[in-house]
Each structure stands twice: as structure tokens, then as C-alpha cells.
Image 1: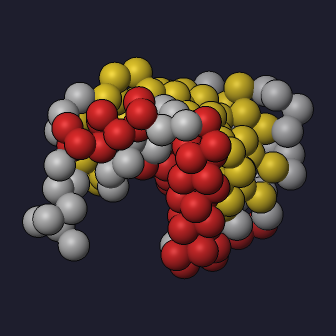
Image 2: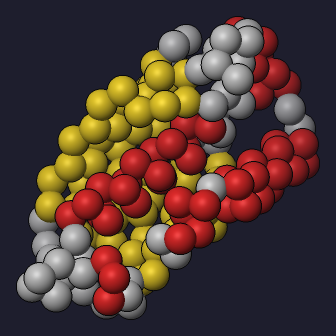
Length: 153
């Protein structure tokens, strides 16, 4: 199945690909109650790339008044997963690591995920999270497993 998707993505016209990514963005934003309840939104998709934004409000702050590390990790995981879906396959996270570089402050978080390598069954994605002032807050690396749509639905 993956071979077909891999071949198809290179045969798509730019318009077809744009329509596929727009449909995927709508699917991700409308079908995940988790994203909705945590004020996350996929704002941009391209091949091997995703941008996901999250509103900072009081219920994601830690006791010090900074964005909780779990919220940052969740945003990174969502961005990496969204980028991996641009392969034409769904995926699940196999492993992830994150480095927290600066405390999260501001009104909005922006996660940018890029494909490092997408193979037949796994992919690796790098994620950088910034605040609206473009301060780098953290960096994450995520490995995903591509689901076989015939077995995992």
C-alpha cells in the first residue's frame, strides 16, 4: 500500500496536492476533539511539513506561570503527526524526545514540523516550537510508524 501512495504523491499535479492537503487539514482540525479542546489548529500543510498553532491560556500553564512541558510535548507530537500524514498514510508515534530551551510565554505557540526521512514503515520528523515573538521554546524529534490501512482501521 505504501508503495502506491509513494508513487502517487509524485504523480499528483500541484492543484491535486493542494486539494489533498486542504482536505487533510480539514480532517485533522475537525475530527480530533483533543486538538479542539486544547485550542490547537493545523494551519499549514505541505509535503513533509506541517504548522500547528496553539493558544496559550491559563489552563496550560504550570505552577510557575509558564506553558506546561506536557502541553509543549503534545503540540510537538501533533505537528510531527500532521507532517507525517502528508505522505498519504496515517501514523502513530513510536518514540519522541524533546529539549525545552526557553520558558513558554505569550499568547500563541507555533510548531513547525519537517520530515527528516520517510521510509516504507517509519518516518522521522523534527519539530521546532516558537512563541508569537519567534522565540525558540523547544526542539523535538519524533519517530512515527506508518499504519497499514488494511490492518489498522
